[in-house]
Length: 105
Image (cartoon, rainbow, N blue to C red; front, top):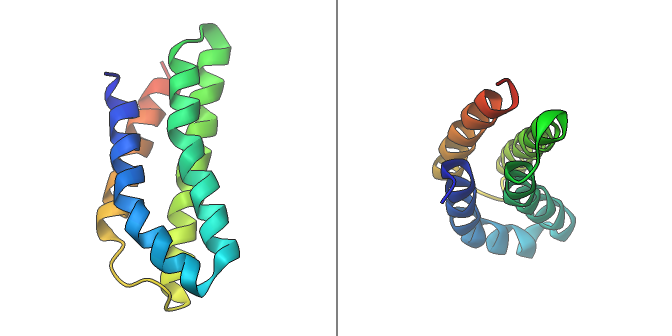
């Protein structure tokens, strides 16, 4: 399996309990976080099957979604809705690094 894709699925698994807790405190933020996080593996998978500039475009979109997911976690933490988001944020750093490499080939 494509390593960046595998990491993004691992991220979804790490986010499941966090988003579940967040949903009880802020449904809108939970919904936005779920959409942004889901966009990461979906765009990685699509980009992996594309060629040329189209391929890099999907990896850049996935990177943008990864940035949005990080921001969503930081916002939730700042509001006091979530406490430990370090595992998810570490995975997001790894994913963004892989996506930077993939989109700049």
